[in-house]
Image (cartoon, rainbow, N blue to C red; front, side, top):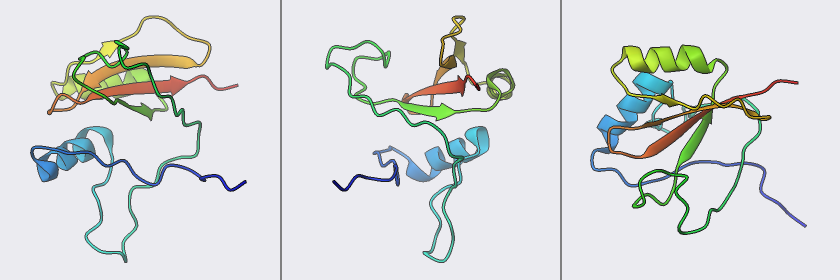
Length: 122
């Protein structure tokens, strides 16, 4: 059976796409879409990707009106949280240390939920 090899992109609507792409670049280091096919897009590090549909009534995403949330892996959750808070971005750190790592939550300027994940390393 053929299977996909990974996620090739995340596409979503935005009130101000250029401004929002700039926020992601400035605060999370995600390069915007290249302006030509000759340039490479953002390259992520290899690692676990969780694909998990949730029940329609799940409160996991926070705001009930949101139907998705992106989870970004980070190497150092404390450093990333300090960087974001230093930029005036509120971040909620989950105090629980789970078997698979540590987590924090924030929203982008348009209210889209973001989860940061520092995976446990074996």
